[in-house]
Length: 212
Image (cartoon, rainbow, N blue to C red; front, side):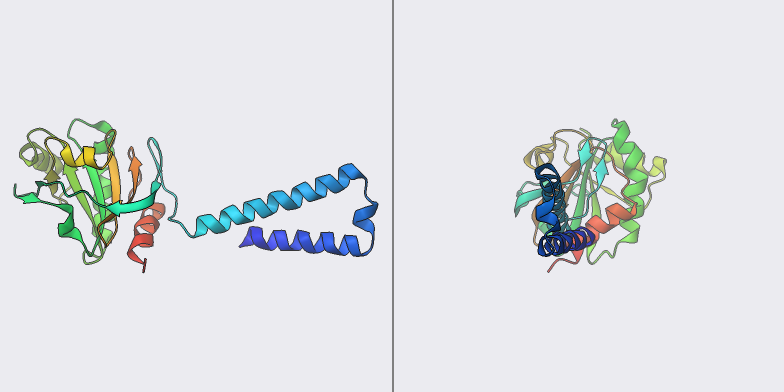
């Protein structure tokens, strides 16, 4: 809104200058410069207002959060819950899911796990939750004790030992975090580790929680 206000102010100045003949009396170069400034500010305002309608930005190890241009239902691919039972993502419909693919041998994954735990504990479980999914071949047998040893005691992990779910969601590396909305649609993903307990991360989750 600040950029829009500046644009309106500049437009008003140009209008006043034109009224008094000041603008038209400027040299061609100066008139072109003023017009370019106004056009640039207008473009910036339009971009800012457009961005305000989308999700907040969050930077990751390999780039920023990338919202889906055409949100589609999450794939119906089975993976394993912490007890070893088959489960699908539709089990989480009604809540926003921060779906994090990780592995015990992945250093960036290990780095962000404590922050993911802090994010998880800050969320209303009826509205949103963090869901860890390890792609370790031995699944929760190795991954859950690893979490405990790391001091992550408020999160359990699911397992995708063949990485079928990860591939179906387009995870190209680890860690990859996918945001799924209340309707079970994939809304975006972030490649690499991130500060998931930061204000920016909480704002990102809140954006989807508060959606109509």
